[in-house]
Length: 187
Length: 118
Ligand SMILES: Nc1nc2c(ncn2[C@@H]2O[C@H](COP(=O)(O)OP(=O)(O)O)[C@@H](O)[C@H]2O)c(=O)[nH]1
Ligand SMILES: [Mg+2]
Image (cartoon, rainbow over all chains, first blue to last red; front, side, top):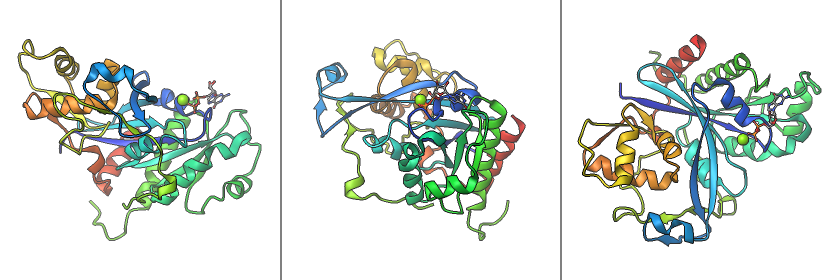
């Protein structure tokens, strides 16, 4: 097998715990990579011309988990929503699935992420980050407020806790497995 | 797996800045993804221009394009183009393209196993 990387996207509104979750489980200190974006197809002649142009820098953090000698998993936190769909597409293309983190005090900040993965039929689960250490709402209440389809798992997680994050990733991969077509030969 | 192609009104307004590096503004190898794995072949890097040498020196072992970009503090698009040039020159080798990795049962089970053993 060729050296293979797999991606899991960690999405959700600002302050929902994306960076914290990646930090809890990554084998490296989370890294930040940047993309330079522009409103239109503005070009520069070479690397040195970059600074002069009207542009926006979007940063995304990511972590890494080595699975074995051939397979390495990357966890990418999504950059802010709305303006950066281009980066979301790059993250989501070929991804195993996505964790959408939510903060029950600000459910609406994660609507766009849920919508994004639903529309693209990318396996995702909703992880309620337990900021308060207690469950303020029931699963039914949260599902209702998010208009979440029955198919998407919903669970509670603690983004600061490695074991909790590991369990969340396991649930996501199981969910992705359950979404494979039955016709595929087992092996 | 199928991907939604996107509605016009939902498309982001922002696109990557086109930067001309080594005569190109986009990588010719369109499968380069930020998670794509690269590794340097042993070679004498002394003759390389600094921006290329930095890349070769930063991938002595398998590493993703995103990690190289983060370590060098350069935008992803720029690093993709530099990597593309180095691939053509035979200085780097590449793993399976992440965007085209078939998320099949075997790969998911390997992943599940690995996560359960963590
Ligand atoms: N109490 C508590 N605080 C958390 C938890 N997860 C994140 N935080 C805090 O919430 C803030 C935002 O988290 P961050 O990971 O930066 O959110 P991001 O914007 O989604 O990347 C930080 O100050 C974290 O320390 C959690 O599970 N419990
Ligand atoms: Mg963050």
